[in-house]
Amino acid sequence: MIDVLSLLYPKTCAFCRKKIPRQVSGAYICPECQDTLPWYTGAQGPDLFAPLYYRGAARSAIHRFKFKRAVSCAKTFGALMAQSVHGVTFDAVTWIPCSLPRRLKRGFDQCRLLALEVSKRLGLPLIPMLTRKRHGRAQFKQPDAKSRELNVQNAFAARGKAAARLAPGARILLVDDIYTTGATCAECRRVLLEAGCHSVRFVCIARK
Ligand SMILES: [Zn+2]
Image (tube, rainbow, N blue to C red; front, side):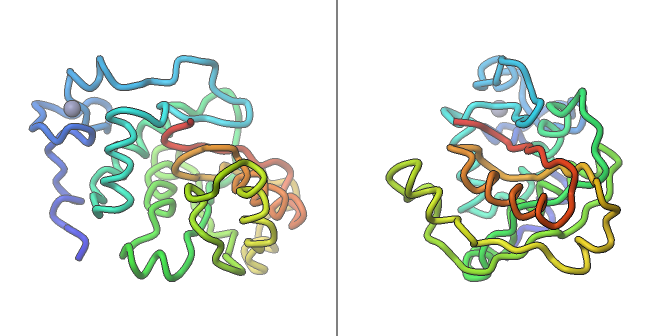
């Protein structure tokens, strides 16, 4: 069961789970984590936005979110992701859907939760534009970049209605959780561009 109460009333730091005195711009982060998290310090964009590096406390929190159903983290992650996006205009937000078996096992689609927060904060419509055609093995289990590329090849398709509803030339912000080699994002971008979108850029919680 998803802990609905924790979704409505997150009162602990999303990273170390300490009680926090106040909410800082929509993100639940204690002062210690604010100081010590592996913040990404390079330039954001134009193609990839991500507030954190995938290591240390950021990595543990993402694992809790994905595998221990810590869904309240989506609020904080989404807030940080939205803050990292700037300098580019978008028409809509969409997300990389997780496979059905994984969603059933997990109880939720983690990228959809993140995309919901990001779209709210950026004031953009959230549109489901992608569907999974087949279920590859988990990307993080792939040994190298080439295997990751092959694992996601033709794994996605554009949703017919959503793609048709979008004006040609839509600028899409695509939500993923972790950016590793970018193989999944690149494959989804290919599919969305083929469906008529003008541009596809990515936002993730953390990059490797
Ligand atoms: Zn903390």
